[in-house]
Length: 358
Ligand code: SAH
Image (cartoon, rainbow, N blue to C red; front, side):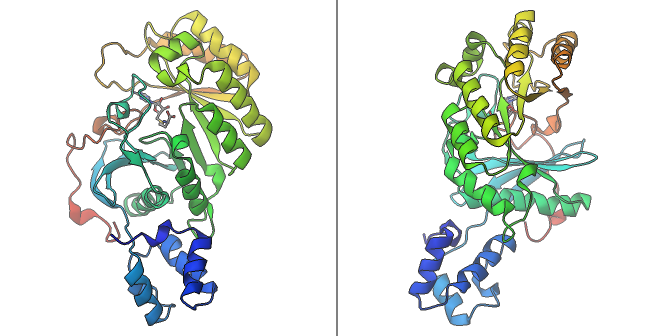
């Protein structure tokens, strides 16, 4: 199979173009076609000489992702099954609210992390997504936002399948293309990267500082509890994570969001609340108390509402913004932690409704 032209960095593309005896500015023109216009056919690159188009087509291909199936939830959430160049499938989700349209995108096929409460963890990690495969998910959702809702895509969250900080280079490149004026030109402030909490990579991200927001799936501020439900905590414990988050804040001055589900008998005791409060006193944070989406494991059950309220009050008492987040797209398994390539639960939207470009 010929390589994907989009896998070339800018420098490599310039090198290739000049090796053909062309001027370097051609590289910029080509990049505009590839990224800003999502052009998948060299023949359509009308400002390039025909001979150059033919030469490129002889050496390279373009492999866009394909949205294979679209499911729409009663609440307007749309879940896509996205087929990649080698036939593997990931999921991405469009989440409409009154003020925003958010794209929730995947960064890996499957996941290696084994968080006990997450459906994606039940899939083996198959491979990392390329930057263009991540980017294409955003392009598809951007078109769906216009097509189904007549609105613009406003936010992007790396909260789909996989761990973005374990696919660092490709995730960074996708962010660069999403924010670049020769890509989608979106503001980095509207992008949130969510991590299970890989301390070393949080520091690297702080150093590179692409201007995105950081969310951390915390779920417990007590090592023994967290290690039990999130094995990553055995090598990246709360102290290590805290140090990395302090580093992040010192470097970026950007407030971190903790994602936190409260489960009955797991993290709904007073001491669980105190531990989170103590942690939040050290690092400027906001806490999203997320509703638990059952994945059929009887060990995990959403805590009583008053325990969740107890968390909220305790956090608010120390001035931390705490929001209780209702799930979206539950009926089509599109909610947090439910993405597992199980695309047979809701009726498909007939293919003829799809925009041509998808
Ligand atoms: N690997 C990254 C990106 C995935 S984000 C991360 O862990 O942050 C998906 C979010 O959904 C994470 O905050 C995760 O902890 C949460 N989640 C996983 N399973 C869930 C479930 N069953 N119900 C609610 N939230 C869940």
